[in-house]
Length: 598
Image 1 (cartoon, rainbow, N blue to C red):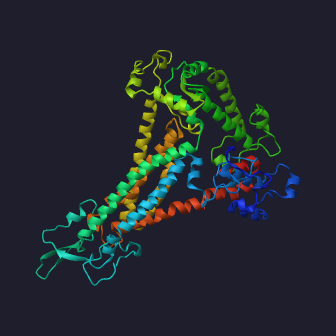
Image 2 (image 1 turned 135 degrees about the vertical axis):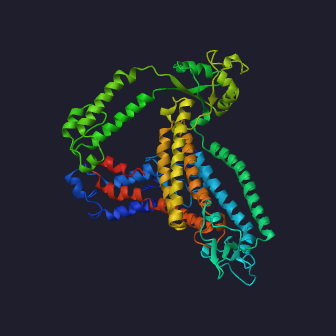
Image 3 (image 1 turned 45 degrees about the vertical axis):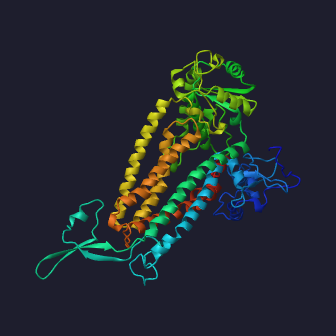
């Protein structure tokens, strides 16, 4: 813990495991654990522990969930309101879960600068939209009154949807003669409509043609207040953009991390492995505390990760009484003791123990005789200084234009000592947080990343078109409510699809990866939720008082989207199923804890 933050000592607060500090799920689990239908293994009972000391403990799993998975803060002393985030698994000082209602906005930056700025922006947007709604009250009053619908004596708007009272829905419609109109003007155009054109024959056989028109009157003041609200929102967002930048600086200054003292070289010579050489070069700007040379060993890292995953799969096949250490090389013993695959594992194409052992040995041979012996090129270099002032000075001194870096113009800087080895103009930037760096992707070239994103962009476009077809079909075949449900379903599925597509891409930082994912999800939701609904609605139905019209369709989409996100997040159905069903049935503590990782 930071020494500048007053903390409650263990003596002052002997335990942070009291019920008032526990989640509701944990309290329910403590009660339900007494029943065999919830806790079939009898976890945490004295009888179960006597029969098998290796019986997994639900209490330990829930403690792992609350102390390692969920975010907690230290308990400040009385009189101090500042909250300091605790590291996962903190056990020296008592901690407490962050309050949903009472966590100060300034302390949200402990979760990252982006999180703090996001909630600050969200709060400001709420104020902006509320004030824009207040400005629009004259417009709502105009729409809800009888003057708009052509009847001064009509006190209220007779809209079919009570929530749309005060909207631009027009209830004053009538049929007007149109001798020159033809049916194909409505049926052959896109989007087509079949309820705004009619024709009848009189006694003489003459065909009389009629069209449905809207008679609602827009008062000149309507446009004035609409433009006032629009320009207020535009100016407010511009001001918010400026203050968000200032807020970001405040959050950044508040949370001092290693990246505030570090610079990153993104174009080092491929053979510059010597950390002492880098330290000597950057020492001309100030005292260098640490130097990290990252190499292009992505294949080796992925092979080690794959080996680790297969060892854990082999461990899951061991009986409870068997102590198998994934770090050991006793694979033959593990194969001999492993139990056969279950029906579910066979259906999911899981590998059995002999296959896993064979693949592990083959992978270890590749690592030892090939990947570990390769000469990997340097991909990035991280230099950490003693003070933030030296870091900022270094960034300013070595700043060069993109064209100079592309041409390796060694005359771009005022001093030749700033050229590495006298021949390399360095591109030096301020790095992201170490936890945000995607080390396995640092070796990818800009050209490789471009083609990867081009491929995923095209696939995203295909999925967006597919969603558009589904929404359009649901709208024409069934109606706006069904179309709204399809939009909500697509918006639920799309994030998972886009997450998979983004996993194909290489990104130097986690922020870049999340930004790519955000752009794809936003584009899809914008098209499905906004553009498609407007494009497939005939112009004559824009303000019509009809279930097939535009405003009822937008209302249905807005209402379902308004409920979907908070309901699904609060319900957390997958997480609760893992913690309350699969968790109590896990065969050992390690696998039980995995169900409590969020």
